[in-house]
Image (cartoon, rainbow, N blue to C red; front, side):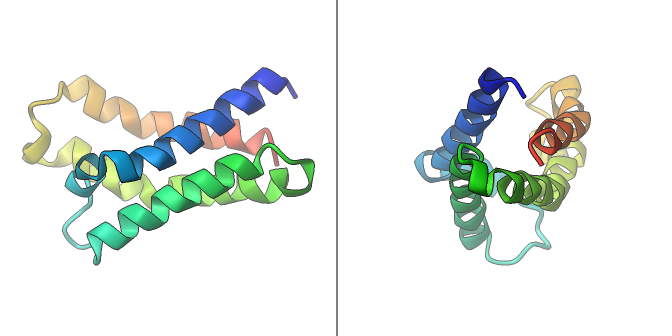
Length: 115
């Protein structure tokens, strides 16, 4: 597998995970109302992204980290659906809100390459 792809994916998740703590309002806003403990869930997903992103870099943890990212992408999918469908986010272009949904599939495929 291409090391540039591995490093890019790892960096993307580490930066995204850190952003959960730098700009939590973004992530808190897209949490569906039915999900409990929004702040805890945002922190938990940020920690998971950081740990799993780092884990991709090591052969011993690469596969389990990739599976963890796939699981995480599936678990956070409802937040993307909420953002796409809620009028609360109409300030963002519709194409951008809906583009995030199939993008999750691409990200899942990309992570799968490292299982």
